[in-house]
Length: 85
Image 1 (tube, rainbow, N blue to C red):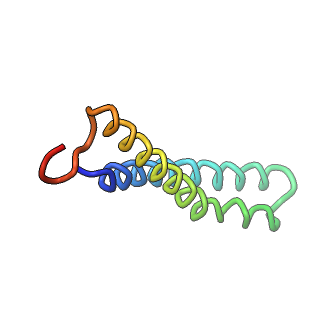
Image 2 (cartoon, rainbow, N blue to C red):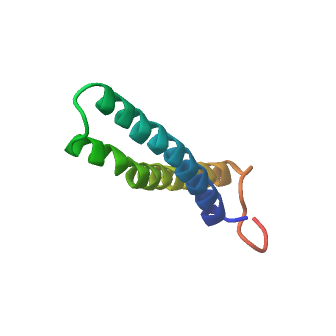
Image 3 (cartoon, one colour):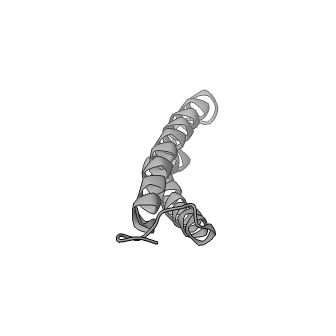
C-alpha cells in the first residue's frame, strides 16, 4: 500500500462525516428558521452545507490521511512502496 490509497481512504471517511454534519446543520437550521424568523437567504446558505461540508471534510481527510501515512512510513511501520521498503 502506498500513501495515496491511505489518503483517499481518509478522504472518503471525511466526506462521509461531512455529509452527516451537513445534513444535521442544514435541517437543524431549517427547523430553527421556521420556528423563529422564517425562511430567508440564510436558510439557503445552510442547505449549501450539504455540498460544502463534505468537500471541506474530504479535503482535510485527504491531507491528514496523507500526512499520517507519510509519518508512519518514515517511522517504518506504515505503507511501503510496491516492491519492498
